[in-house]
Length: 103
Image: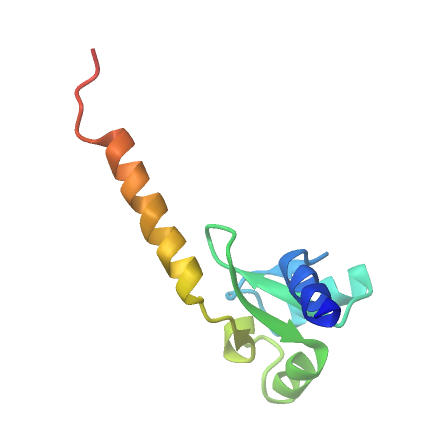
């Protein structure tokens, strides 16, 4: 159980991240800068959408160094709990905005 928790903590606290639209060259530069072999891939809102390992980047590099990270990354699936939390937050946000006119 400790190993699973450690793995989850590692995934939730990446030292370095890239965007899906970053190039493989850019991802390699980030990996070298932070001395890591895995970086998180975050979306526009900052949420984790995938991970990419150095071996994936190097494999894609052979074809096109300027390809996007999204071409080689491993996507992170949303769990049922995350989907439910997202729906709850959306409902709460809707209630706060709720179409009320400012006074």
